[in-house]
Image (cartoon, rainbow over all chains, first blue to last red; front, top):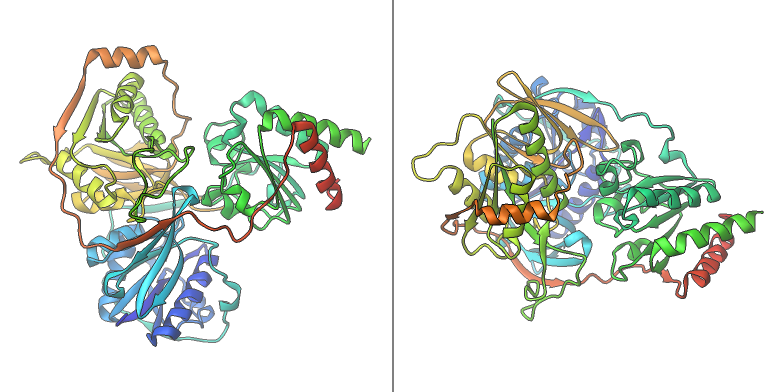
Length: 323
Length: 258
């Protein structure tokens, strides 16, 4: 790797996203190993205050402009292209999140660099950059080598520790004058999360249902189990998309991040997008018919079996025990 | 509005995935292919837009095993045209998919229609080299928004809803023509009876377009594909439902959860 490393700082409504710290952590490690400078690109409107919290970077490249309120992917990609040429950057890290979605792909076209998605590990092997990506819902890993160590990498949220890079030390900040193209994609407004009947982030016990529940009528089984345990039900994306469970109860990447005392996953395969939302739960129990389902890699206890047979028996036994 | 839905099949992960002898790819012999959830939602969103605002829906799919069924199903659901892009696309990545779709939309001297809306999956489980949507949008020189969960016509253009995180969403406007990466449609994908799919098959309305394999830019090298070794693994409880339930109750009790 001949040039610098740049991370695209992700922020939402004035707050730095967790993924920003995760990328700073990886970037710092690579920077030390390759003796390359680590840049943090901070783009947005009214974001100067955030620059003080990016101390893990050697330099913050700040582009502040009122037109950069929730900028579209194309605008961000164009800005990053200028920055990586100006600063002679080899490796760009962007967040694998809905907020940044599209930026890496567009930047790779415009900067003529390869783009690697779903990355959960970055390492140097004899000076070469080798990445490990997770594919097919986490069932297969792929090791990829970047030619000349140059490329754009989308970092999967939650795959890297972040806490030690919440550096409060001030970093050098450079206001970079970059022309901002006017985009035909215009941000209009935020739509706040729907307020549900319960806040699943505050529950001690969650019974989560996935595709394995098969149909809406079977939800009653999960509801009964949740009631017996003193909890509520929540769901993975396919169930929410079917309209069987309200959006306010979605767990995962675009839903809620939950950390209950007990997370009981029924018929959930454990795709990375779902795991991102529940891996911090204290006790995880999973029931699934597929013995290879990735949910068993994050669960503490697992049952390979048919939830439709097991759940009613389990509910009755819990009720009996509680009297 | 002329809606084009790009459909690309992905390996069905319900089946066991096996790494091929080269250690760098999947064993394709045993693979079954299917549409991903967000592909299904992209088609549904296009059909909803047609129902609400009129216009046409053209379903376009890259040639692959089982692709005929997918296209006939699209016709049965209400698509006006179904086009199979014929070529060696098996195992091809997002760049190639975008290139093929770009060639179809701008074949010969034909320009992209001014009222074209291209809908496709936001991101799929095998998009190792990136999402198709941004590649296609840049190729066509039109705007792109991904992670979309709602689309409405607003004036000459569109008002789209994009999801961020934690239930937070945002609204954006953009003109046509445009590319949208659909995360989920406003309604669940519709069910279509098999009889209707068979009728679509008999109608023979599927078109085929020969597309030269697009040149793909210099990319990374896949060195190895493998099944992950989990850092942790659940303690598996085995037995008949009665026995498993007893053991689960014991686990819950041990952890002071009941």
